[in-house]
Length: 178
Image (tube, rainbow, N blue to C red):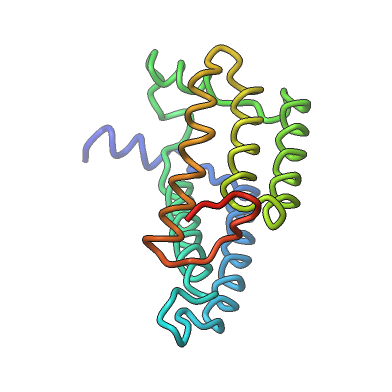
């Protein structure tokens, strides 16, 4: 018998049950979401994308990602057995601590709420420009020119892609785009 296999058999697997439980609850939520989306029409009478198309797509994608995360959690090696080299240690040290930036988090939540509130009034493109511009400007203080270019280009290109390519009606707002 191989020595490495004998050692691996003796090492007790550690399963992170709270994480697995959380992923299971998330999976259950996405399954209910997808079930509701399946009841919606995915195509309109006029041949346009219907209200159920994107929810179905997002539901199946979210289920797949959650299942992959659960499988990865189940098959990962125990921490005591896992070799730690310099690259893995640096990657682990670079992981974000989500509780360290409450002001940035609150600013982002406020900006997202403003985006949703202004979406119907100013339109998809202009509210997207304002949202992306505000968040990029505050989070990347060294590259303001890049923030302005991305903040204008991404929402306008997405608006045109949804309006022209996908034939999805988005709020035009006060700008005469399209």
